[in-house]
Image (cartoon, rainbow, N blue to C red; front, side, top):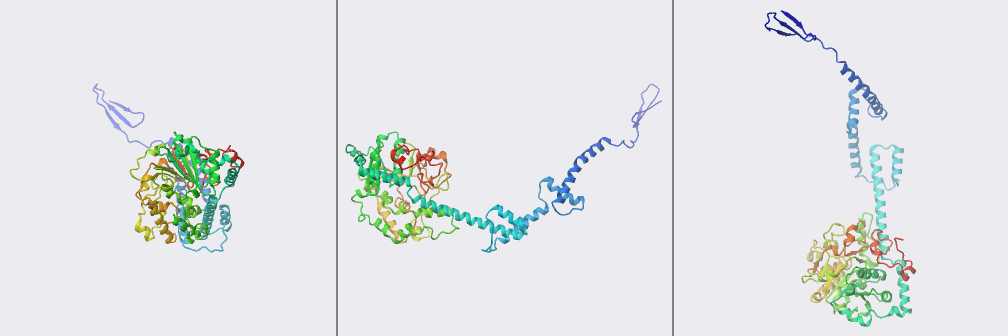
Length: 537
């Protein structure tokens, strides 16, 4: 018999000597293992690494003056959230208390005699200096924010008011240009020559040509409309412009286009006084508009009266724009008389003087109007929710029974400024009579039906006669929407600077002006002598 003990002392093997393998293994109970020195080493190493950080954080907690911690349990509660990025119970409680304080003071009146900081730096200085408790801090914060909000609104309203007066003023350069051209008309026979020349007079009633109508007293704006139309056209020899102006501006306008003919296009310049039928006797409503006391007070009275700092700046700007005196001028209402002004024409394109033509407009003459009269872009749908969100409720007072009983507030509005009019179809309707009727109704109602100039009565008069055209033909809002999409501007056939910020004014938006100024000839002698400078120089 043989006895073998394993080196580890864990098994004993017993075998016989008779040549027959008869062995047996016996396991011996394991004694105490040798201590895990390697694990102990790593533990000590980790503790040596972490303990300095624990000490530093504990010191920071103590120095910050937070709750005194006298145990590791407390220290764990304080430091745990710092490691994990969570708010502590104390911070949650503080924020909750602050919310409650702010909510409480929301219903408290702030003393009018309170002295408040005028800037954020002053605000910080005050709260550091006085060491306010949480309630006093909330009151001081509310008072400061309300004060700054009032100041911001006052500044906004003042800005809109200044824009309003600037928009109605005549820039010095344009005034100079008008005076020089008027002087040229009186002293230069070339400036008085017939427009168009006698041999081209038949073109004025030739319906195979493309006739454009422009009503304006702004000679520089008129030059840009005509120039941009001709330069953008693929067939400029087919263009005939009918420029109509008031009596005082007639010599100015005639002089400009006599000395600067936009060949090969044809231009006719006429004054309102040259239309024999257009008298106050034939159009009594216009006499009523100019003499009505409410109209005079609305358009020439105190434009700030009735406004306060709680007004929305956009709404205030719209109210001011609606009170521009140009809305009661005969020239502005003249568009409703196009069939009478041009009795021999079948179709015309009407343009405002604050537009720029960037694409050939010839395809507009081929649009099938489906029996409608007014081809226009609708303004109730589009990407720009400020410019293209106009419905009847935008313009009319639906709290008035006359309006609510006759109109639908959700009906889509359309834009003046670039319209194609079928004059033959127009002559068969009562559109002009309807326009006059609603103007008189508004006067009888003391201007309570609407206060937005000539578009509202036209929206009513042309109901059922509007043919929507693609919005790419006419882009609006460049005179009040500073955030106009530049890519859309470049792609539009006609861009319209409707609003106060006209491109010829200092208040015009700098990034939108170049689309207009590119059609001004700044090297022209009259423009140069009047110091009308290219804003890019």
